[in-house]
Length: 229
Figure 1 (cartoon, rainbow, N blue to C red):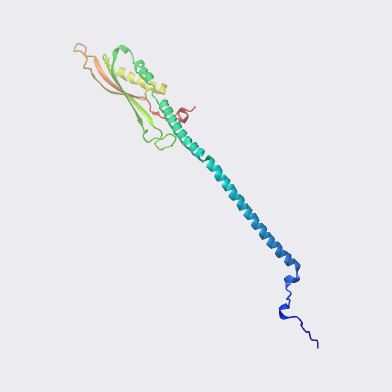
Figure 2: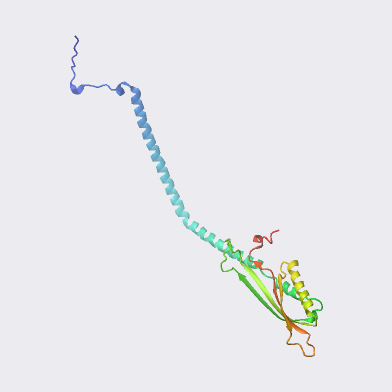
């Protein structure tokens, strides 16, 4: 029977583990530690780079902040000027050609113009929808519209004046077909014996017409589908 005597003290005993017997595990552990350290260093360096970049951006922004705000103010001012200019263009585009309209009133008299005597011309022009309109913003109601009307009063001499006045009415309506600025609506309001007629010649009659050209939209020609070729 064999017997073994351990001559080492208890605290000097060395226990051999698998790691102490396998060098590959030791190398793997060292590599893992190195990877963790390298990754931590890369993350720290990346964070430092981002912090430096942020500080550079902050410095750059501080140097141009006033100029950017000034540019924004100027851009807003430019928009207001452009909207105002658009309103002016729309106002110009929507104007009525009064010289032409007055010329039509004179030139479309039927028969002998000497039978007619104009006593009064009253013009009335209004703009509908301007108060709530903002240039550049589309709205359900659309752009402002200019409307106009003329009250024409005069005397006509002779008998059988109704056909003559009917012919005058038809002539004025034809201008609205032939011309974009002609009359769209012509109404003979009434015909009455004139107070200026003499007892010896009562063939003088007073007539009243209401004349209306087409409404005009306060938009520029490029925005008006009716003006686009």
